[in-house]
Length: 122
Image (cartoon, rainbow, N blue to C red; front, side, top):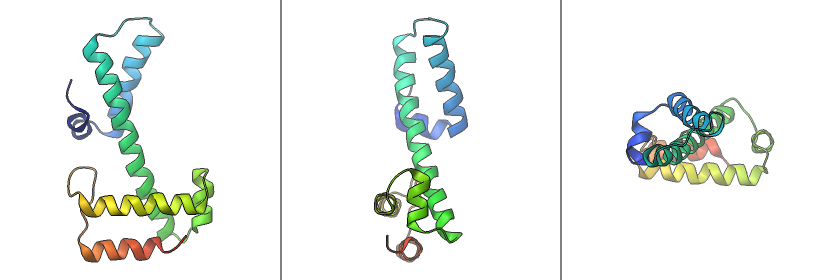
């Protein structure tokens, strides 16, 4: 079992979900005890899935903005307020600007400015 960061680079979202489901099914449905390594892998895979799903969600927020969706519409689709959706997206933009590694875009100043322009105000 690797670290969550290693698993994040090893698995796609679909593969991580499949492995998570396999381990979870064995544990719950088959009533089969997991080894310590498998239990830790299950925990790490849950985090990998959350990270990848969150990243994908913010990419889709960008797509919705590019397609002309308002922050009210995006907030409604996410089950939150327009302000909360916008703030989460702003935090994601800030994170992308800082981290040129897997799962992050690593934007330069021009790309960051373009992302902020696209995001607009809530």
